[in-house]
Each structure stands twice: as C-alpha cells, then as structure tokens.
Image (cartoon, rainbow, N blue to C red):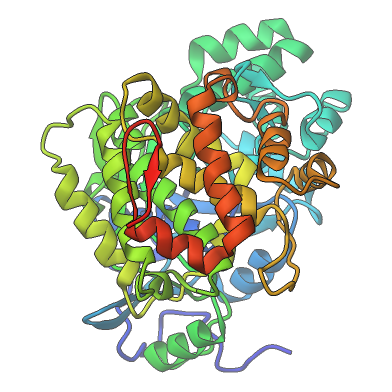
Length: 502
C-alpha cells in the first residue's frame, strides 16, 4: 500500500532536513550507476547532488540493480528522492538527495538496462557491486571464466546479466551506432580498481570480438578511484529518523558517518560532474591513497570485524569499547602504515587517530558481521599484500598474522560457545570442504593457505609466516577467543613473529 505521506515531491516543507540546492526537473541524466545500495546513496549520489547544485549540468543518475528489486521499489515511487542521514558524536542531521532520477531492476527490464547504458546521454557508468561481483581474476588480469556471471555472459554475450558483460555489450552497441564510449568508473574497494576493470572488460571483449577489444582499448576510459565512508545497513531506526527529519515516510533513507572521501584519477572520456565542488580530490595517481585506505582502514576493519564478531561485539563501536581490542586496532594500523611510502600532505599517525575516532562513533551501528562477509575477496589487498611487504622488508608480521589467523578462526563457522553462523563468502563451500575433519591449527592453516588463488606464494612458502599464523590460530583453538585477544593485547613480539606473553 502506498503511504499517503510518502516522500515524493519537494513542493512541501521538509522539516529539519536540508533541501537540494537545485531543481531536479531542470537536469537530465548523464550517469548510469550499477549497484544502487546504501553506499552509493551515501557517497557517489551525494557528491553528485552537491555537484549539481554547484555546477549544474545534465548529470542526474539512472540507477541499475542487477539482481534485486528493493532499490527500485523504494526509490521509484519517491521519484528518486531519499534522505541521507549523518550521525556523529555532535548530533544527527539530514538532507534530501535528488540526484537519482529512477532505478531499473534488471530482473524486470533487461532491455531497459542496455537502453540506459547505450543512451548517448549516458557519459559515465559507475559501479558499486562489491568485489566478488566482477568476476575478474586479479592475478591473471582477465576474467575468471568459472565465475557464474562471466560464464553465463560468455555463452550469450548479446544478452548479458553481469556487470562486465553489460559494459562490453553496451560499448559494442555504442561503437556500432557511432556513439562515443562512456567512462566506466569502478567505486569498489579493489586495488587499482580502474585498471582491474579495464583488464577484465578487455579480456571479455577479446573473447567475443577482438576488434571490439581494440576499440575499447583506444577509446574508453577506466579511471581509478578511492572511496571512503562508513555506511551501515539501513534499519528501522534509519526510517524513523528520516520521518522525524522530513515529516514524510521515506522507504529509501540511508545513514552514514559525517566523514566522506573520494579520490579520483581525472581521466574521463566525455566529461564529468563538478564533484570537486563536493570535496572530491582529482589526482594523477590514486594508488598511494588507495593503498593507505585499503591497508590502514579496510585491513583494520577486517581484523576488528573477525575478532569483534567472535568476541561478541556486534558493532564496531563495541569493539572500540572492548578492554583489549582497541590496542590491537592501534597496533594493526601502525603495522599497516609501516608498509606505505610517505604521501605528501598525509600524516599517517594523524590518519590512524582519525580512523580510531570514526570507529568509536557512538551514533553509527556498523555491524562486524556485515564487514566480515566476503573475506576471500577482501583479504588479498587488505591483509595479504601488506603482509608480503612486511615480510620482505623485515617488518612486523605478527599483526598481519594475527588478522589472518582471526579470519581462519572465523571460517570454522562457530563461536566458542558452539553457536553457528554462515560465513557469507563466495567460496564458503570450498572453505568448508578444505577444513573438513581438520582439528589442529597447522592442518587448518595449511588447508586454507592451499585455497587456489588466495594466498601469494611468498606467504604460502615462508616458514616464519606460517609459524606465526599457526601460533595465533593454535591459541584461538586452545585458549579461546577472549583469552587469545587478551594475550595478544598484552604481549610483546618482534618482526619475526616471535611472541612473549607479559
């Protein structure tokens, strides 16, 4: 049933919420975004909303949902309007965002998706589909032909359903119609995300049309990006706050922390919004910023998510109130910072302090279980790459060994008290099969190190690394999660991973 007081127009009063600084009807669409989730609405769409108010242009967004219909069902009856709530220690604020024009659900209208992607007005196609959805083999630099979406789209490339297949088919149709290519803008947490998406698209195109590959390589653009904003999954409290702020029922409201960051490589094929007006930073090389964020923020997030979830801390803020985990958070950030080259204008110590304050934000309910999902997709760039750097340069590896061992303990799928949980990982079945019947730390660690394509050879073959991981995992299995966390927080250890409890 339609709520008669639903947010559908900007004609009436909006209470305490801030109105958009422009008339949405005066701006056409120029962006198609694949993956209209909470993060997109709190990040790229919010930046675009500010850019439209500051610089104008036909840059509103056509949203595309590849699998679900929830985003379309929530946003379309509201004409794309929704409330973005910012919760910080200083209070709660809200703004109504009008950057999204409509959302197409691919399960209902596949033709409409390709029509949006091939529309000459669409000049940027951005994506937030999670790391696992691309189906790109990061080591080989091409598509993973065993990935369900890639395998299906290679069989029927003219009727694709996955992100990479859709981009390739849309670019084929644009080439054949004499339409300029769009810029494909990956906004997921992948190392060199633009370069990785480009390699995946080129490899897919080469498999179906080598001439198309050459055209894409010469004409299309795939800028690298770094995105950052803590965005919990919306809850009933989110909807209640939106109604209090706007005076209307808002079925698409989202919430986020006040902090937001976007660093982009300024390499676009056919223009872009004035995102710098919203604070976006355009640089020649995104990689140093990306490594900083992936290793210091995302890597620490993964560590605290596994440890916190296993230690009965449902939210990140609970982790930061734990008697021992904040010390491990600080130590991991310090170890991650040590793997980075100096970055002009960035003080890693200050950045770490800012991250800790963000994690402590009492107004943000960011679930550790949510962060813990898709571990095999996140570990390589967040934990394993910096671990290789630390090992190669004689730096502290225990911090990374602890984080990886915590993930291994998490893969057992049960708490110390026996309660079970789903791993929510694309390789969950393979993980379960690998560790089935194994009871010792060495056996479990060996099985997980042997998962194809996950651990780099440098870590799999190094006895110091393997010993450090097995030592922590053994403590988890023998002493339990809480005792191991307490021991790690109070212990001393050096670059070799040798550990002494104090």
